Length: 597
Image (cartoon, rainbow, N blue to C red; front, side, top):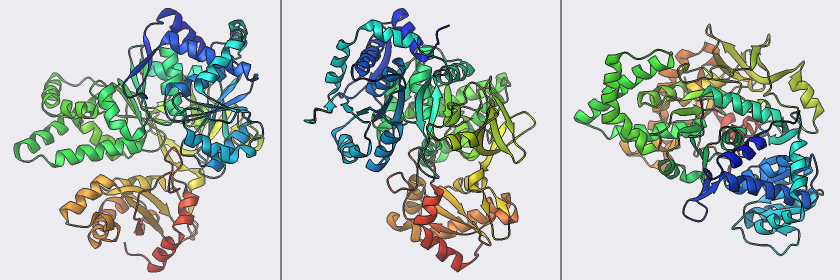
């Protein structure tokens, strides 16, 4: 029996609802729409062009660019001919780009800009299998004969009969690798996660069904498409369910795009939700008198209302009436200002989010559900759902997925979402896939209702000089609930006590500077900031922890962590080894200063 893939869904939509809009972009300054029929035609033409360039089954097409139609068209063109798509983060250096193109043995690379092309040209000699580079539409042309314009690339497709393309599609197998997701490389060179056609289709179908997606959804694509979460939302699930995707080409313009698009579903990493929280708090702080009282009352009602919904209970008629008033006076205005007024599915994932942030967002009528997973199981392992949403947990196993804990608490996963292994890395594959189970590397615990909580990463466990094993994640989450803290990293390997590296959250820190008449650029050195943090760590953080887990001193860093400065991966995970090395002098000085808390 021929395979069923996300590409077959694309063909179906082109035939059944060909004139309906599928993709929207604003690359020319105003919105352009691509219909399902045209979307399908372009992926077919891209596939034919790839055949003309000599790509065969298993050939890897690497893609370097921001969120735009050419990204998904290139990826699907590769999958359609039995090839493999592999995304590269736009933040990657020349050396990182060279590594991925070389490691994947990619003969074809699609890039967005001339600047990105320049980065590739610097390392082309490191990728001997790379034969052709294609520039996306609008990038212009280049005099190197190995570099094709987008139109020139698509024109090559005319050399290949459509029947050959159709034969490639019908020859696809469920277990055939369709996609490489390169891990973010927190502990070394990135590994290529091999996802099959079955992984992509099955996972997208299960996840979409869990939240009752339809073809009337509207999604905003803004996170890097190299990330499994964005690929699932903007490509795989969109193809399965046939909904519209708007591309936000520049993540810095997310706030403006949200207000224009008004999506019906929205996936955000914790940093995005925390920025929303900071912005809303800032606006609410300006309210005084009667307005402040009304806002406070509305938040209390919303918290109670959403708590009832999260528990799967129908709010009482009296509570529904109160909520309607709160929504009219306060909540709906917040939702509209954010562009979330049509949103019914709000999800956080890719990293832990503080429970306090979820509590606050619920208090303004934004019930975010947290999801847990990894690239190795095509995105989702467990998820909270509307009507079954417990803050502080990452939900229950996705339907059809088995989740259990090893003796040491490691989370193990089995299902049709689990990957086929790491490309060209059998040793890592054998460590991660054992008897059909994915060993996630994460530590967790279940509550009595089957909701999973993440304790930390096995590799992140801190072993103190006293031999105590400490998972830093819960401590870092507690630290990040402090109003002016952005990112927290706990340090303590082979030390007598724990310390923390702290960055300041820009908006909250700015308000603190204004209230205390401080220089914003020197806040990290201000005694008032340090005293504020000392007080809140002592009162609100340390009492939650065992004594060995108490933070005894801390460093306030002068800037936020970022991918550009090297502390974060492209998916905003902290590179602990890099942070330890970058700030070794500050760490040493803090330990020399001793315990102050």
